Image (cartoon, rainbow, N blue to C red; front, side, top):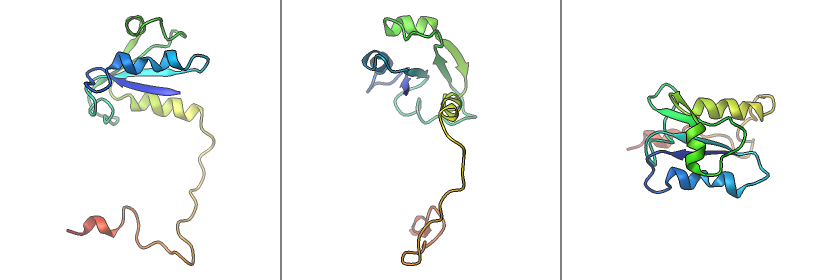
Length: 118
């Protein structure tokens, strides 16, 4: 499991989000702490500013603070870490299936013509 918390999240404090590492004992959980708040901590695409922390010590730590003390800071978006983590667990990339059918042909390319309507 890959879990992300945000350092300044006012809805789900990062140390509460970290608890998933304790709740899923027996499962390997990669917990990542992103800088910023509830939304900005998550919506931070590559190339953006920010910092994220990872802890590759092996054990999640007895407490959130213990995890943080051993964590390593990285500049940029946590998305690059997630992409690498996901790639290690994904199969080969393949051609996507064709959209629509003879009975239900696609009306327009994504994102659709409706987005241009006012």
